[in-house]
Image (cartoon, rainbow, N blue to C red; front, side, top):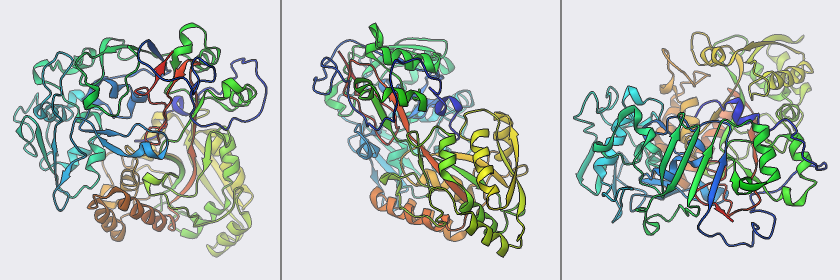
Length: 572
């Protein structure tokens, strides 16, 4: 996962006129605050759940989506070989069987993974789900016409690098075998102990070849989940789901599927979403949002109302905003200069620039502060919460800059963006105290991405961020620090262009481990080792604060997505 869009992070920053009084909210996920929708009310089946979002659920095709996309909406329609455990917090960052009987059977070296389907699985029309259908959707995900989904299988599957999908090559991928209707076998180029986590992504959902309509499949997909699509208007702007009569709760321990209907409405102004959820009038009492945060002004007002404060869900998604260095650009080739900047940064002013400590946790580690990633607390350049300018000056002197130096910080121009002018200015002001004069170089969003992800134009000092496609250190550290993932003629995310054999070898060694808890400990140790090289300066991890309607029950927010899981929600 790349850079979070401004609409994902800068949401609800406008006060919406709630008649409430000040303070700061500090509440975790809870159910509604009144008797009807309160925590003591038992969830039950029935009713309509309304989802009020700013961003549309575009390209509602399993070949083009990630499992976490769309605030969990896709997983209501598309079941996959494995899925995430639907539980609060860290417990929800674990993988669980879905269509498969277990999370996968690895070969001794984790290069072959075998799955068996559960009995009695059916589509919405009553026809059986087969492993050939799963193989077919994976192959569809390679088609240029259906671009946008997860890229991993192109690299992981044997002989898949040049494959162009079943529309051009109906022979399919020989690396995926289906010896019978209930067995599927994957042959990988190298050991991948985290394959069960990858198998949660929607390219592992079944699509019957006879029902495939190519680029129009998203309009009327065939459901394998608890809901089927009634209508999909304007490419995901308004999606209505109803119960799939052939879904069986007996084969699906993860999705509760309480509402009869789910109505997903998008394109709504963020302030309006928060206003409607807080008021809770009519249908909005049975509404949630999966993409709109509360802002600091709204949080301050809401904390004065006990009922509203109890309707704020808190979530943590694995994402880190950080300063990146390109050591090939002077003076950032000198580690002492990079260390000086790490000491000089004032994380408190940076966090305040992004809405304050209710919406962001200060970071000293590259990995997010969650067990599933292998989080190991460390701070290689301890400067406290407000920076250590004197220590920075000392390091600059050692680097040959006793009178300070001038550098350029590249950032986005979009106000409120996590790599925008507010954060850049906070960094600029902190470094000034250490004798570092920072010139700001703002770039429009698209131009900014093109510049920082091209090795020929990458600046030496810039703001960026990274989020994992599943909760593990692998998709966090691999793309950013594995030297074999440096891309010279396309999008490159190894900004430091680090190609350290010891790091590469450790990544390979961890990838062989199928015990995910053991692997997590190794990812944490590797994070600490890389952190000492001052190739990045972690700044903060975002926190999601989101309102839900007063009659909403059974709120679950896992550390996998950080947002309310609508597969668990019930309405009054």
